Length: 468
DNA sequence: TGAAATGTTGGGGCG
DNA sequence: ACGCCCCAACATTTC
Image (cartoon, rainbow, N blue to C red; front, side, top):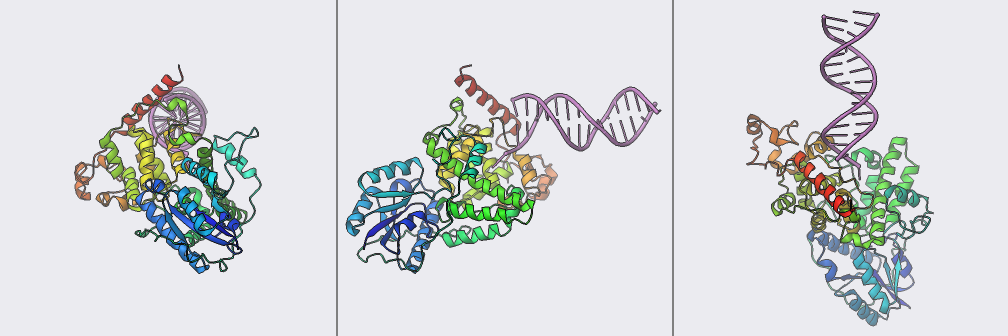
């Protein structure tokens, strides 16, 4: 009987997995292997590593229920795979294609010496299949999404029968899955991903259009970590939400589901941008904004990281990130805008910090989001679009519940002052048990002034680089 | 997937 | 009845 390898990278699922399907564990001996690659692990945030390791454990359990098991190896993937091919006599390696620059270099090197077959699955549509009539990639979201929606849909989900996997031969050895703390708010694994998708599509998605912006509500899907490691297949999620759109009870509900589909398409858009323009991981997409003179003040950067800038919504979000390894999407936009446009700190510093913190940290989405906020990317927010943290608070955390949840110092501050506590009269501060400048910091910058400085800096870069 | 500055409109108080 | 002013509400422009 033929033996092949299923090389798992960021497709930690049995359901709707083209690589596993093609490897064919019912008719061939399939060795599921995950390689702990030091080059990748050194970049992974601690919490993201924990989420990954817990996901491997959960995948191993599912494989054992199917009669198989997960094989763990550590080292350079090319060397480890050739060793495993020798040990097992495997005739082929099947893996889901990954579009990051590192992954592509790695896979190319592997494919030179070993029979590697890459299968699509990280996105609903492959980055190469969504293109303009002349074959070039889209760099603006709206036309991209229109073309994306017009493409013929991939065929419906198919699954390998889970109870009939041929066992992995005994002599194939495996390292132990590294221990990791479990993350209370994000239990790892494809069962949890499925539960969350069901729960979300059963009704919360109907309110998504408005609720997703509210920091004080659970309006988002909270599926990003599961997408990040392929515990949920894009195809499965997209086909399910398309079904929800079809069967929506009314136009309000349909609008909610369509908005979420659009967010999934944003994810694919950024995967596609990184695939076609890998240099965005090193510099701004827009050449005329590569000469901004940043003011990378280390103390302000540090205040931003630890959530003590004096702007409650920024601080609450940064503390949420530090605690959960996850931040609400609107919080990401607000904190990013604050770092770049209020503190005038290079967006790449923020990008790097988020990658070090986020459970869902994905090179394409994270880079796309930061370039968008900084206004230096494809289809980016115009450079003059600057979030006012106070107004954002009044709009998206109207009672201040989110701020109070994450900033205990402000828990007795009234609604009137919760987003601008520095305006509290002394008497009010005493009543709230929160003296500004003592229990909670004064703002590190004054927003209106900071805004002017940033507009100048951006204009200057454009003047310098557009030669006029 | 902004916010501030500036412009326009229209209701109502008042002489 | 009419013009004038004030100003809130909304719309448009600008950064």
